[in-house]
Amino acid sequence: MTFPNSAPQREVTPEESKSSARTFWLILLAFPTLVGAILAFFAFQGREVRTYGQAVLAAAQQQHFDPSASYSSDCTEYLNKPVPQGVQECKVQAVNGQAEVVIKTERGQQYRVTNPK
Image (cartoon, rainbow, N blue to C red):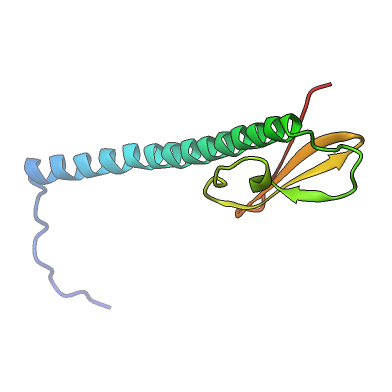
């Protein structure tokens, strides 16, 4: 098998080399930055949900939530503030004689906020 004569290889100019190196480093730095930004967003959202749960628990205790009750009620009954973005459900319920706030998020996470004993 014979190969046809190919055109001579051209050389990469210094400008092309610099451009390729710059693109490589840009991609290399952009990826961890993007991952860090996503992680920071999720961490902030989790903190916001827990802070909201603590505020609901404090409001429920100030309004004399009956911990012996066998029902659960919506968080908005105790705190006149909208739930944080990404929260599907927020309930105040009695567990072992104490009030507990259970928050479920769209990502499938569940947060339980209780008073420390």
